[in-house]
Amino acid sequence: MVAFLSRLNPTPAFPEYPGPHSVGTVDVEIPVADLPSTATAPADAAPTVSFRIFYPCENQKENARPVRWIPSPQRPNLSAFARLLGAGSRASDFFSYFPTILYYITIPAQRNAPLLTAPTSSKRWPVMMFSHGLAGNRNLYSHVCGSMASYGLVVIAMDHRDGSSPVQYIRATADTPSKIVDEIKISHSPSPEVYAARDKQLRIRCYEASLIHAALLKIDNGEKVDNLDDNTSHSKKERVEVLSRFANQLDVQTPGRITWAGHSFGACTTIQFLKSVFYAKERPQNAHSPLIVPTDPSLTSQITPASPVLLLDLWTLPLRSPTQSWLFERPLPSYTDSSIGGKNILSIMSQAFFKWTGNFNDVRRAIAPPKNFSGAKPHLFYPATSQHFSQSDFGVLFPFLTSKLLKTENPERILLLNTRAMLQVLRDMDIEVADVGEKNLEGEKEETILEPSSSGEETVKGWVRVTVSDAEGKDSGISIEQDKKQKPSDDSEGMDM
Picture 1: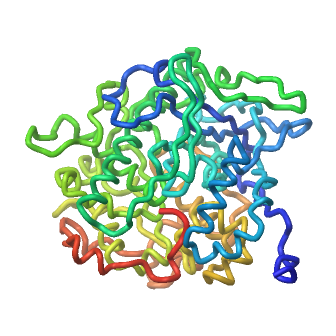
Picture 2: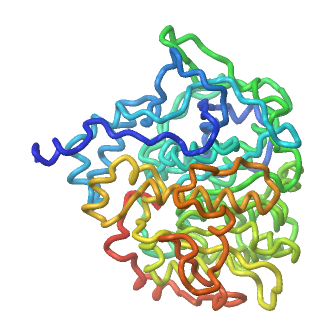
């Protein structure tokens, strides 16, 4: 084992973000009491909301404190993370030999750096909301979020306090004590109890997303918010107030301009949140308990057919909850406008999840247009050799281990392909983001990553287009008993969903 570890970089590191902008970051935790009411609070919702902002910044690396990958407080988070690594992942035996080095990993972002002036026609930065998967947190997708920020987006990486993270720490407010939310163990096999437990988590997640949207409006309006995070920047650890810099800088006031994204359970959260808000007024009285009933007009007006939807390795089991069958039958909001259709919907699977037949069928069903729809089709792809964790930070942090154990190849390129496709969807929706330029690995035109090949060959090497056509307007018909038989391939077993 010593010889094996000697071949590894003792401290794993991230590559620089690929876009033309430097990336700043700030951690935010806001008391719910300081925000306007957006919906009835579900059971066990936290008294604060937490998120990390990745944003284009002025380059000020001098005297900056490093931004740790393990969130604060580092030691308890590290302990929880080590417990998770030893809980069944195929790679856990290897990772568990050196968990302490995780403490020293930093991300290539600058803490509390000044925000760049937006070069867009509106003089505001486009915004993306990102929801993490199981065993995740606001940091676990830092390279995807930071990469998107480097091309000119303000990315809001949400923390979910629903028991889906290894551990979450909630700071004390003026009215509530501090609190720890530990991971809740829920089976991955469908059953009425599992569906009920996932519904409960989704209610918390949707509520948190609605509150964070309200927080962004307050920040953009220049209203003071009480950020409970320490926000220290330099060696003297003095507090720096950053949020006021975002006043009148975020494109969050115009309906349909926010991009909604997530990975795995976070992609599932994105779908359920968008549908719940968009179809809230149409929900019949006899439908089962909704995931969220929005009461904030600014939120209900924000979700429109034009809202971009970016789904990374969508995990579909919670979509099949019997109490959410009415929601499952509704198409994504994009299809209510034939001029938009599926052009703002991107679903990127891993090759491992592509091989998982039950989930793959439901992914196509979830993003498919309704029957007889004649507008644009959604985009569905997978990068060759990718695993479920390939869209998180693990692949780029531990490329040697993941390639040997799980047969992935070139994890940095997989994330770049993800980023290129996500950016192109935004460009097609007239959201102004930077071009890839010389950072394009193969020198192709950017738009080709979403274009089908007329010859049937790959337009971009290792980037596989998948048809959605045979799922259109149909129910994939996976029952609970059938779904129990549809398991991921052995290679797809990972730490997060």
